[in-house]
Image (tube, rainbow over all chains, first blue to last red; front, side, top):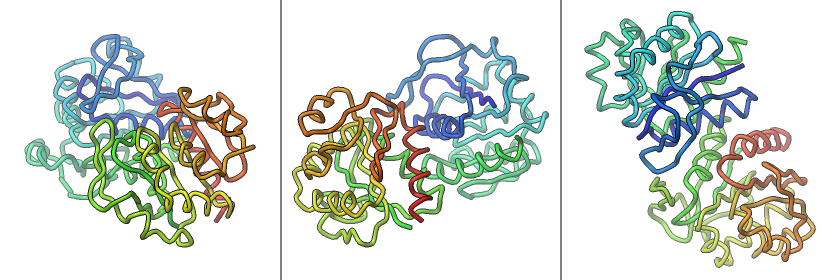
Length: 169
Length: 169
């Protein structure tokens, strides 16, 4: 089983590393994709190697998509290939976990209208404008879509992500 | 079930928050103890509220001990009550998870001689001087003692920690 993380510089550090380690705990291979090769660095200063560019991703190879927050999603959402990848997962009913600002990529991909979801409170109104049924909960599970608000929700996000991953085996 | 984290300012952020969230995923209550009340801040800038001082801890109430790394253990190991707490867990055969510099508290507590363990490479020789059978592995499990080297091992640390926790139920 393989998971894909879409991110860029200024990701929210725990929101990238918690799901990465949590999925690795389950023996799931995790790859990080970004706009270009090299290292990306989080808002708090943790770094990670990029495994592949968005253009190099074949989404058919992956079973789970993770969209961490931070300032990174405001860059990721501008990349047409990243949006295509997000559409592939949402429409293919594969598990998608988005936390905090991670949902911005789903807004731009045009795949979140009518879905129940949560996010960082500062972009709550953008979610509503995009037609999302916003809920202020630590984690919201709507079919294949799992969303949380911020790093303090990571335990709940991880729990639901792993449950969904096991069901999709 | 209840877990206790002993730490202080300049903890290694992921090494505190990964086990904290991972244990919460399992519905385990997690409390953070330090020298004094207030907030402690990690090396990367994440903060967390202290739930109780070392003096306020009744170790009988807790089932699992977590010792994160960073620079914090060089303060924690100077506190006699923190050392008593560590002795309680090791001698009582309750699960103890120590990562990176976290083992420094176990060295000072005098409870790690003759045990198989790992740690951050920079204190490997201190471990050997303390009589530890040091191994350069992502995670070393010796009875109730689970140790890892650094944040990149957190997935393996988490996996073994949860296995041990379930066995001790």
